[in-house]
Amino acid sequence: MKHYIDFHEDVGIEELNYLLDIAADMKAKVKTGIEHHYLKGKTLAMIFTKSSTRTRVSFEVGMYQLGGHALYLSNDAIQIGRGETIHDTAKVLSGMVDGIMIRTFSHQDVVDLAKYGSIPVINGLTDDQHPTQMLADLLTIKEVKGDLKGLKLAYIGDGNNVANSLLQACAKAGMDIAVASPKDYTCPQKYVDQALEDAAVTGSKVLMTTDPYEAAKDADVLYADTWTSMGQEEEKAKRVEIFKDYQINKDLFSVADKDAIFLHCLPAYRGYEVTEDIIDGPRSYVFQEAENRLHAHKAILVNCYLNS
Ligand code: CP
Ligand code: NVA
Image 1 (cartoon, rainbow, N blue to C red):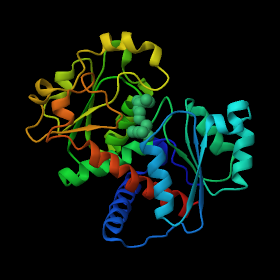
Image 2: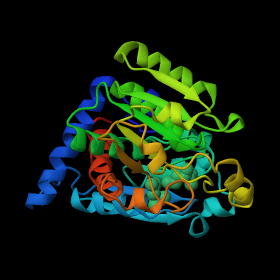
Image 3: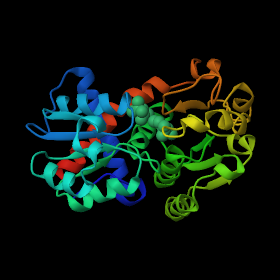
Image 4: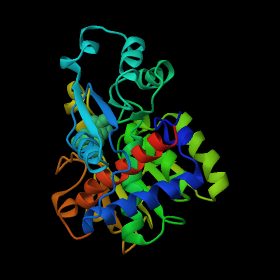
């Protein structure tokens, strides 16, 4: 069974190139109106226990463009919201649909869905990881910079799901990665170790620091995410204070490479993790990045469905 749950475990170094190539190919097909019904008649159940704009729309539109059909299942509309177990949900859905995409809090729930079900499972974000975002990010960097190997990405901010997945993805792509976070908000060591393991193979470097300027130095990509992730809303005021020196702005760009670009998984909060002049300025590729969720997710779907 081909799942897409954890970038480190589920995406091989060669497979990453294949995924990026088919994403680019399907993007070209969409732009030129060439039909690509690789998943004709296939279905995808999409479970959401957290909000989403990009992930939901891209998977739903993606299945349609591939000739299949997606069902949106929000937490409060299905029985999971009333306590039905992951075990039973996995068994029931496996009998009716061809794959599951889930966005939820607990990473273990996604792992269990795959364990008890008999169809591919795609992780649309958990508290720990955001692997589908990574393929769109790498596709965008490749489009803008031409290649990935040898580039440096600096992530500035909370050591959250996006930061963890960036550690996994950059090391796998042969990109140097630097993460700058406040002392008690850095990524779990597990993700640093996974990145170091792949970096030893791909030849990239991994830097963990509390200094945003050290991370941003000579970087080709400066990457931000919200300081307050879904589920942390009550901590917002405290986090604004803790993260105030971890903003991507003109000053930080001044130490990066002169052709550095800005990326953000979105949704963005202008004036907090990034200033308006940067996110709405010429170095920002955030809307190309958002569109690439569609093309990247179609590659993930095709790879999971056709190789399971
Ligand atoms: N970046 C991202 O996952 O966006 P959504 O929360 O809108 O899906
Ligand atoms: N870290 C953010 C990402 C949103 C796409 C969150 O989990 O809310």
